[in-house]
Image: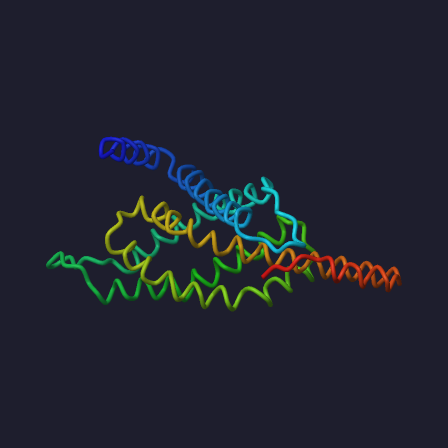
Length: 226
């Protein structure tokens, strides 16, 4: 197993040195897709109420997560390189790690990149799902604040470990690996919001048609997202 790990690490290092952006994009996209696969598997296999149909695996949804991870990971690589330059951890004089610089690095990441990254995620998913501007605004209104609070409860410790112990080329993959579980959370949360928006859209269409009896049936037949 150690030999396999070393082989994978060397292959990644070689690829990163030759094509850093492509390596980060493919790695981040793949791990993001893995997170959604785990999320969908959980949603499919978890218990459902009697009136609910079991959801089917949505390949397009996983592809959307891959596209987002593919696009954002090179940007995260540049962000990590900026933090490395702006807040060097080791003192030139004695070579010791500066706890102050490490704290500043984590704080900068969580106060700037975390809110920005979450906004990019929600906006990107809305566009990739072909949502209207109104639906994207509703997604922000419903999901942004609780997701950001949850982020601040989880990611500071993960990034503290990442910035302290991981070499620069491996920080985005480490972040993406931890992010499999974060993607699980975001994927389930985003999926529930999509169901709620589809419900609202369906009811609006029915109300616009003026069919009150159909509206009543639709309200009773829409599956719960809780």
